[in-house]
Amino acid sequence: MSYSPYISVVVPVHNEQEVLEELYTRLTQSLDKLDKPYEIILTNDGSTDKSSEMLQALHERRPDQIRVIEFNGNFGQHMAIMAGFEHVRGQIVITMDADLQNPPEEIGKLVAAMEQGHDVVNTYRQDRQDSLWRLKVSKWHNQIREWMIPKLKMKDEGCMLRAYSRYIVDLMVSTGESSTFIPALALMYAANPTEVGVAHAERSAGTSSYNFYKLIRYNFDLITGFSVFPLQVFTMIGVLISMCSFAFVVFLFLRRLIVGPEVQGVFTLFAIMFFLIGIVLFGLGVVGEYVGRIYEEVRKRPRFVIRRVLEKPEVQVLNNTGT
Image 1 (cartoon, rainbow, N blue to C red):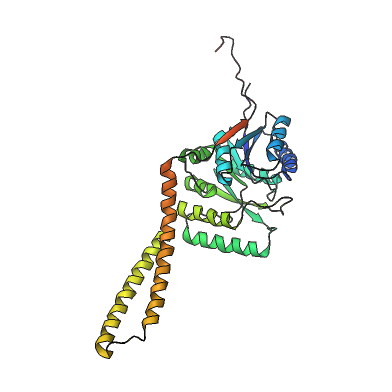
Image 2 (tube, rainbow, N blue to C red):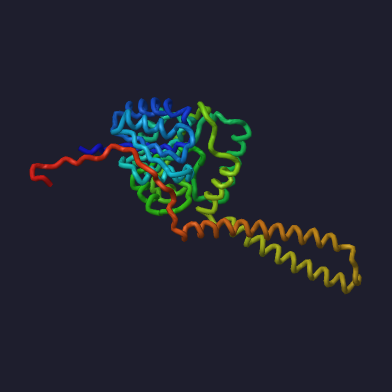
């Protein structure tokens, strides 16, 4: 008889050996209290510590409920979640990080909101346990994102504890995008989204996998994947500079007629030229980000490579006729 879960929890794992045991205990206890059939999909995103061995042991403890996807390398958090999405069986799909900064005990809030008829449940962190610098940067980033992509209504895009209906998950999987930002993509398809506040805790062990470069890439994926605002900005800058340049040429021409030849402004012209060259190079970088995304998509390379999947094989019950 096949096991048919109602709730699927997808958790990306990357070098989380210090927290996996606590994650298993708290997550299974929280889901058991809901008294609904569930499954937990743990995606090992190229961990180099003992996470792989520990995940296999967790699967062996509860083979009916815990499934493990092993990547052949490190493909990133969002691809690890997308791989889980491709294997989910439940009707309510929940994502969360393995670091326990969003307590598994909060999952009940998301399930309750989904059962009220919402198709996407986003969350925002209450009483965040982060440094003042990180809080400020996060606040500024959310403000910039709201300004650049006003159609994405999210209080806190950095909280990965979220819930989606199976229909929304299937739509996201069908896109086949080589890089994306899952919470924003879900909102593009949602008909009745909502937001709930969830608790936030300090990281219990280990270190974050997001370094400064990955944070920059994360924001590039968000902006270039869901808005052409940067291209529009540089179009307007180009128009403005062209008008100012034309006015400046007219000014220099008239000055030449009135004052005569002079060289006193040569260094000013060099400064203006270097400034404009800097803007051009920065604009080319922005265009390059969009071209790079197009390049990645048209190559049609696999978004990730799965080495193995640990799960209990489904056994179908035969009827008396043998069909």
